[in-house]
Amino acid sequence: MAGTEVKKIEMVEALLDWCIKRKAALEAQWSARIWTHALSGFDTPQATEILQQAIVKNNTALQEQRDAEKRLRDLNVKSPDI
Image 1 (tube, helix red, strand yellow):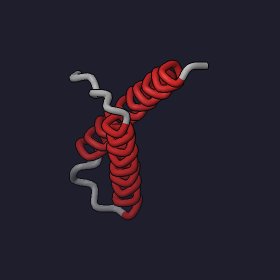
Image 2 (tube, rainbow, N blue to C red; image 1 turned 120 degrees about the vertical axis):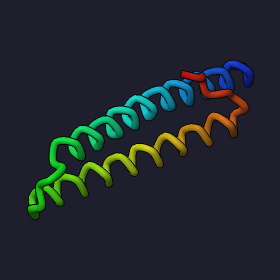
Image 3 (cartoon, rainbow, N blue to C red; image 1 turned 135 degrees about the vertical axis):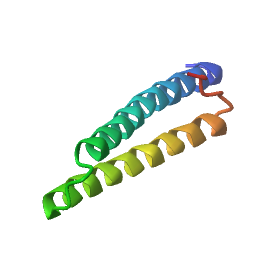
Image 4 (tube, rainbow, N blue to C red; image 1 turned 45 degrees about the horizontal axis):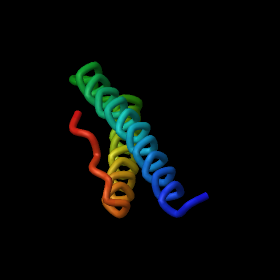
């Protein structure tokens, strides 16, 4: 396989990875918002735990998305504007 073909495959893989990570980040963000709204006013350990888990999941997903964006930049590929 020629070097440019390998580079193109890497670029497509990086773009697909970014799309998957972006979708996960959006889902985690909406989940955190929904839980925050649903549990507002509840001051229980269970509510606090659920919110903390949603926040951690959201932060993890956002970091994974940023890592995927960095990979795209390293390959000189622009992430799509959605």
